[in-house]
Length: 211
Image 1 (spheres, rainbow, N blue to C red):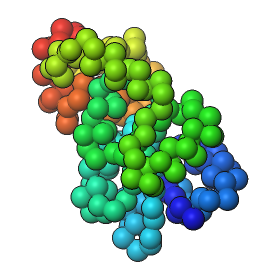
Image 2 (image 1 turned 135 degrees about the horizontal axis):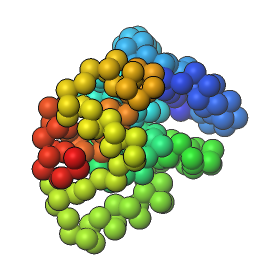
Image 3 (image 1 turned 180 degrees about the vertical axis):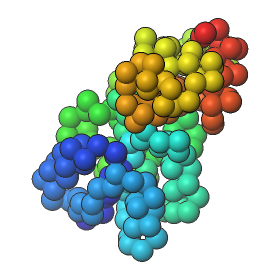
């Protein structure tokens, strides 16, 4: 029986994971956490085999940060990254941080099940669509520094405001969005550009002529 927890800041997503995972006889659902800090406290007290980790948690410390922390504090743990994005930079950053597998939120439940079983057996798992993206990048022979991510129109707007030194609340007011949404987009940008913080984000934005 594989013991699994999930970390995602959307309660309805956690409820969906619970319903799906409880339908598999070889998986034991331990619980879902909207706050990674609560998940960390749980892992310090209870045995767990696999963590399903949302990459874009909408916080200053995103899923890639938590992947690194879990890998350091719980080396035996298997970590499955889950994202709405299929960007090369996001996938590469997560795997480099110690992730064992990566799938999209659009994947069906059989792919999720297959991914959990694979990483529990010590294999690296990538959804087939993601393998194609990584292969395409390799075939293009692009070094990481040459990688130019695809940004949505909203991400481009937020990137310009970040460079202009707007605060989270100022960006939220300017774009008529919630602070949580702004933080989520900022985390997405940091992951896509393969940087650690806002300073790195601004530097890469200039280097890659994104603004």
